Image 1: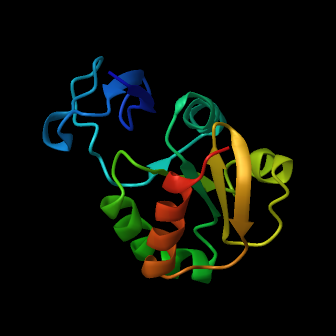
Image 2: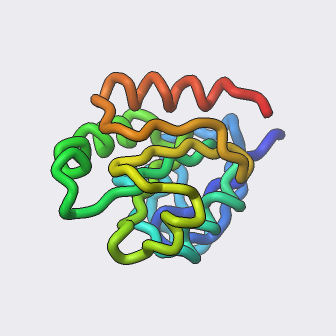
Amino acid sequence: MDTLKIVCPHCEATNAIKIEESKADIACQVCTRSMLETKPVDCDPEMFYTHLNENDIPVLVDFYSPLCAPCMKMAPDYESAAASLALEVRFIKVNTLEYPDLALKYGVNTLPTLIAFKQSKELNRFTSALPEYQLKMWGESLIQMVI
């Protein structure tokens, strides 16, 4: 059986998930909470790298600031897109006020900046707020990408 490594959104343990499993009953092998958590994960640098390096699924990162009006306006759409792609794309958020060095490392100088990664490699980015339907389409295209 094929498996995917997916990081738990709660405890950040890396889980081996059988592709054939029903999404209805997948629990973390460490904390036993549902792996179907759909809310974007707020990450510090350590969590950011765990998700980037340990997930076999694509990771979509929202570099934002709570003081950025376009960022806050996009937040509900980002959450809705995350809910529609549970266990297929991990949606994470990095607060650039709290972690400016991480934003600097990835060349983030406009907010919001959205960066897509797969297998730790940057695939593409947008430097503007996107509506829910575009976030979903982008996420679905990332699932299909082979690198």
